[in-house]
Image (cartoon, rainbow, N blue to C red; front, top):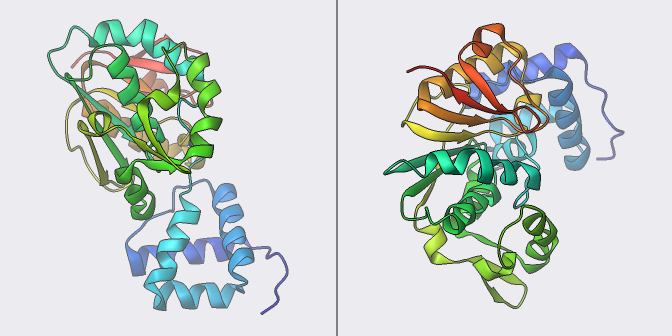
Amino acid sequence: MNVSTPGLSAEQVTEIIDLVKKVHGFDFSDYSKASLKRRLSRVMMIKKLEFYDLKHVLVNDPDFFQDFLEEITVNVTEMFRDPTFYKALNTQVIPYLSTYQHIKMWSAGCSSGEEVYSLAILMEQSRLKDKAFIYGTDINTVVLKEARKGIYSYRSIKSYAENYQLAGLKGTLTDHFTILYDAATIHSELKANTLFSVHNLISDTIFNEFQLISCRNVFIYFETQLQEKILELFYESLAPHGFLCLGSKETIRSEFFKKKFKAINQKENIYQKIGS
C-alpha cells in the first residue's frame, strides 16, 4: 500500500493511547503528545499503514506490537554519552559512594545497555567494581536482550572512543572489550555485577534501595504530571543522601521536589536526596 506521510489528529493519538492501554496494558497517556504523535506517524510511514490499519495490527498482531513498542520508546544511547557527566560523577559523586560497603545503582530507561556498561567501567576504574551492583531497566524487551548480551558492533565502539577520552578515563574504550571481526563483547567481569530486567516507570513500583539512580534525558518525553510521579518513585527508591542523575537536558521543575533534593551539579542535573 502506498501512503503519504500521515498527519494524525489529537483525537486519533488519544484513540491509539486508549487502544494500547486496553489491549496491551501499556499506558502512554502522560507521554508528551507532540513526541508521541511524531513517533506514531513514523511507525505508520515506515510500515506503510493507514490509521485504520495501525489499529488493526495493534489488536491482532503481537509481533507487530513489539516493533511498535521499540519505536515508540526508543532512546538515543551511546557509551559515555555526555562525557562531562561522567567527569562530574568521578569528581563529585564517586568519592562519596566510595565510603559505602555496598553500592547499588539503577540505570532507568537503559535501552541496549550502553550506560550500564559505562557505569561498570567507571566503577572498575575507581576500584569500586567489587562493591557495586548495577541494575538496568527498560520497558522494551527487545533492547534488553541486546543489553544482556553486551555485544556491540566494533564500529559503534570506535565511535564512542572520543567520549571515553573526554570523560578523562585511563587507556582506551576497547581495553574493556574482546574484539572479534566486527563484534565487540564487553568483558565478563564487567557484566558480572549487572542485571537487566523489565520495569515500567509509569506503573511499576520500588524494587530496591539505591545509592545512585540515573535516568538521563528521558523526562523530555513525559508530561509534567508523569514527571512528578516518576520523581516520587525515584525519591522513594533512593537511600538517604542517594544521588539522582537527570542529564543536561532535564531539571527538577517541581517546587515540591526541589525541597527534597539539593543540586550537586546544576549543569549535569545531578541531585542528592535530602532526608530519609
